[in-house]
Image (cartoon, one colour):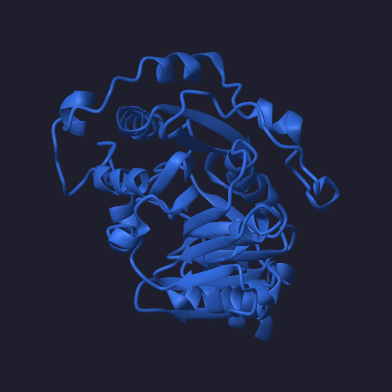
Length: 337
């Protein structure tokens, strides 16, 4: 039929789409795949597809998860469960800070973290640093999960910068500037590689004000425990306190993803919110109970992370692995297949 022919043609054009299904396959989670049916199993549900200078960007409408945002064949968010990640990513650190006036978002070009940050009336200025302008354009025109004024420059609190975040943080004017930094990054492959290097964490530390907090996308403890240990080790070495929190999101690998939160100038855990949420009725996922529960980890994960040593300058030596730059994650040493 014409419909099946169109769907098969889509498989040749769009990475990961075949026979009416999108399937995510990535080197960071070998041996497993995640699939979503396109709406009506039809290529007509593809809303946007472009290759930018940096990456391949795809937006489609799925059968069960609403609109889906994909970069380089890797699922970034779905309309159905994005709240489980983004509300926690933003509100865990912001409600752990007494007065977050200046916030930096690294990556997050879909604008969803920006949407959540702007719910906080204490925030006077938020800077979004996204290297790829086409990501914001795709979000504004096709995802439409974020008020347009946050992405089109009409909100005076919002500054959007198209730059490499690692280079942006090197600028002297950004030292000691931010109360909270959110690193809503891609996985450590492609254009996001520099955002998982130890030097980037040093730059984030320098960019924080005293008593500032960072929150970084912390991968899944089911398959990336070595990477999490290494990230936590770096943060414990640089910051005064660092910890791992967790949430569930069915469209992410293993249905679980975490965050690493770290404080500058304070040794207090982020597990207890210090402000009351005045916009609770606008949220789907986050509340005070979920905030506290995010820091309750499975016993074996808690044991593994409690034994993390301070970073000693050599990830591979620390992890007891031989280095093979071509086939291993540059930070964790985990095998890429």
